[in-house]
Length: 108
Image (cartoon, rainbow, N blue to C red):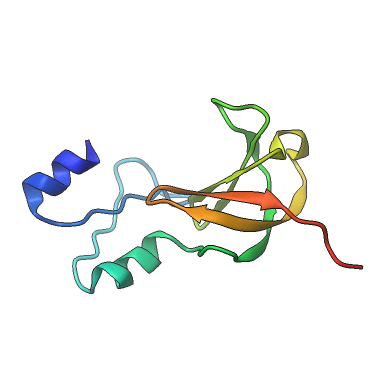
């Protein structure tokens, strides 16, 4: 549906859930370049290392866990068994609506 909205509007759209905001509430940002708007919608980049709290197992792959950064979904490979824990992860791929990450060992 997102592609159809983009074709119909002639604009690039990013949609992201934000903590504490209901489904009927929204914010529209219309100014800026695609890169500027993308940086608002995607708060992580490839190779970022972040400590995240794994909140749930992934619904379609229970081996993976889900964390959120500013409402943006982070799918953590092998994180399903780490639900309820803070984990250091490295972002390996960023997509328009989510990112994939892998847990990394902390250096002692």
